[in-house]
Image 1 (tube, helix red, strand yellow):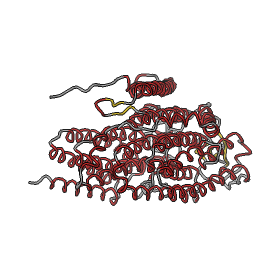
Image 2 (cartoon, rainbow over the protein chains, first blue to last red):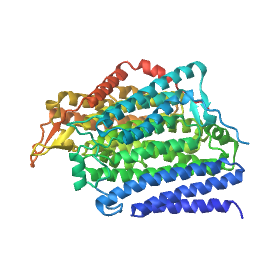
Image 3 (cartoon, rainbow over the protein chains, first blue to last red):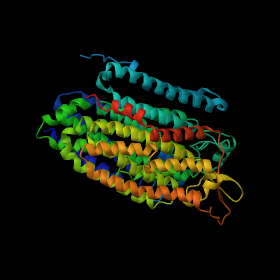
Image 4 (cartoon, rainbow over the protein chains, first blue to last red):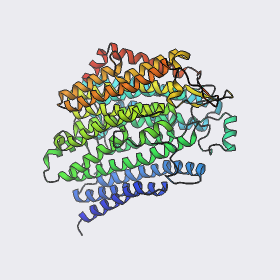
Length: 99
Length: 522
């Protein structure tokens, strides 16, 4: 199977992820969209590492996983504190700051 | 076979000092009794930033004598622009730290415990018990560490990690305000979601550039840019995504949506810190990426960058004029300034590097100073309770008669924002605009000068409001008052004001230094 298929899959995942961030109203689902985008980038990195016969792409993917984990810690802390205040995790409710 | 990299510890001292202080700060939270915690944290952080500044100065002299070089197997570069940006960053974060630490009437600007639900019994008890969220200090130190690595990063992975290390603490800091906590939490959520979104773009750009060149090192990318015809799609998409990720951080239009909300909702002292220091770090990284990697792509990227720069200047200025909230006005003004700074990036002229760093210093001094002053102007309700900051512009009317010193220094910062001669802002604008003209971007300079003229309107309007307008009489008996503090903010504001005047009247010393630092090490 051609390696290009993995790149196409990564592109699709990235698009789904960014659509989820832009369209979904629940902050947790929007956040999952971000995670999906990071994983799409990981898949791209690993595929290119295989194409180039070079390990650094795979190593970068590990760094990204660590960063994604740290981001989950911060993000869920913020979302949980808002949920406890408002009783909802909807992004539409968080509109006190006028734009 | 695995070869252990050679690590130049001496050159890493500034970063190590700050990271050490941040880690020790976390331990201080655990082991030092509550009564003395704030003092210990403040002393530790201030000493660390000052120590890092000394270390950066020392590295500057070393680089001047023995030349720039790469560190840690090519992960970092120690060169003039990096060290200069780091020095500017440390000066600004020391001043911002003073504002963050300051207390008025025994209260700092942060919630007693951020974990308490706003308005709950638990929060009341925490407030009465005099709890303080001193974790603010280690969080700030972690953010400054990331900012310090950002301008020196010589591969995209290091840049990405530094971006996250500087952003993650800022997301939390934005949600810690003492008053109007719902707004603050909302700002934190928006900043987090959009920040994470933008770093995902940055990361995808990194992955595509890795696919193009087989390496994420900026110097190898620069070599690969002209070498591989036929893979332009990967290269262009990758560079554009990386630049988009960085433009999000500087708040350029159309990636500025978070700026006004976050600047308004975050604690004012944190807003000052993040507005000044994040911009320095992100612009320094943007300069390195654009000047090192993309000169071969000028023709492809120019339409994109020019559009962003023009949109940023025009939208920032126009929307700043129609705002009624002080912090939102300053936020849109910062968007407009990002547009002016982009001119120095687009110029691709050696003078642009020094010019942008000078502009960042001038802008940062005025920003830290003005947000420090905003944090002092509060609303007093009919019962005489002093509460949150007086956000609405009308509440600032007549302030010049009651607090002339505050009003005069605020006016000075506004004049510097506007770029009036004899202030730092003028020198900075001149340096960046002349570099842009030298780089052939004169149409942008025309737009920038027009935008500056329009922007002067709303800065002067605020000055007129402060000095020549009667204070309004509110129906509910509330009024505007200026609180007394322990004096840390006063020190920071005085330093910012003196710096703003000095950089405007006698800029030659600093300009000579920035001119020396106008070459990136490839």
